[in-house]
Length: 207
Image 1 (cartoon, helix red, strand yellow):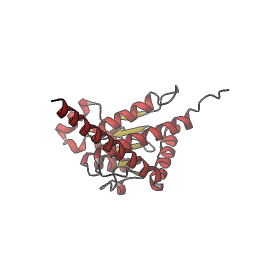
Image 2 (tube, one colour):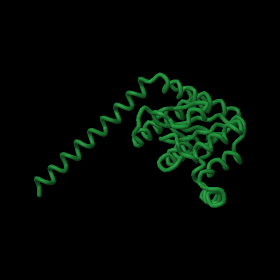
Image 3 (spheres, one colour):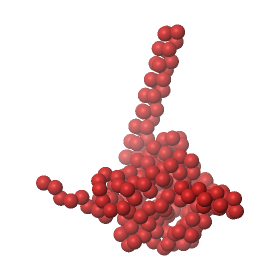
Image 4 (cartoon, one colour):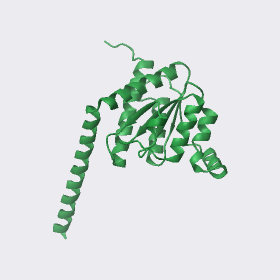
């Protein structure tokens, strides 16, 4: 039994190291991708400009990407690296009354579209997240954002499905693996949030 347990542990260790190596390689691909870096810089500019002008950030996604949407909104409203004023951000994934009402009355593919149409204002930013780029609810939200005059930022995977043509700014995670794409998305979001934070709420000078 001990030998079998040791074999299982060895196999699990190999699996763990293999996954960590994949994660490292995807991060390196992102670092070496000029288009990826430019898209993050453009996202910082768009969000910072909107917030400074009194606009807000709307975020949406499904499943794990819904968790990312909430995570990102939380970083803006609360803080990321240091104390500062809150920045206006709303995750469209958290109001169960709205989501179930829209899902029941209009269909699930409209749960974010209706919120963008109701809450979005010209100059706001919509951050839409889909690892495949093919989620109907996300695509409809992006169309609604363009209709309302929002700046639409898409976070997606290597190909992006139907998101690129609906985006003002598109951030492609350089992978086809959903878990790895999601890791790059939250890393990218932390970078963007941190840079927006520093631009809008500079840290006090220290000795």
